[in-house]
Amino acid sequence: MTVIETPFAAALNHLLETESWASDRLAPFAGEVVRFRAPPLPDLTFEILADGRVAPTATATPTLTIHLGPEALPALARGEEHFMRAVGVSGNARLATEVLYLVRNLRWDVEEDLSGLIGDMAAHRAANLARDALAWQFDALKRIGASFAEYAIEERRMLVARAEFDDFSARVAQLRDAVERLEARVRRVA
Image (tube, rainbow, N blue to C red; front, side, top):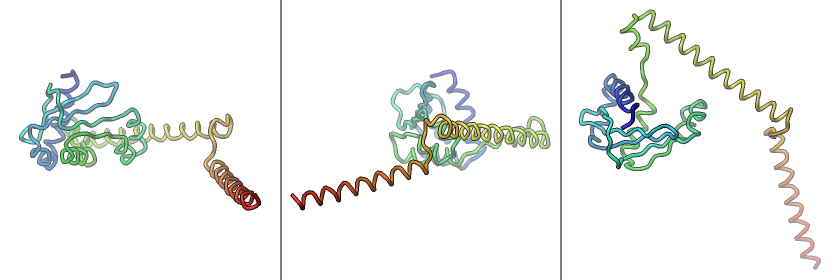
């Protein structure tokens, strides 16, 4: 077991306890082992308990392995569908369906948890501040990416604009068709 499996399991169990429908979906898979792989991070391996919660385990053979490649983080920034395409799954297909359903639908209500610590109004303000900060970060990343793309296309000519690429592709197709017609003529004459 790794150092982060226990706190990760505690956080995951907190989510499962606050959303009883989620633990109900996992309960039929009691005894199954799920491994999350996201190199270079250590693997996280959990056993599903009878009540639908999870516990860290040292079991070497998982029933299901979920692999997040290096493209998963940038894909997450592009949206859920891009992220889901970056997730590799191997093992029990029914369990994989349930786990991926939970990934898509299980959400942490940070504001609710904070309200128990600092009160409703302060929790609402803190959550809004965090949402605004994240939105600003994503907007900044998007603008930086767009600026780099513009620089790489317009200034350095390292990349080609989509319209320019499409035009080039159409011209290559026209040239190929013309060469094929010329070859056909040559064969008829010869």
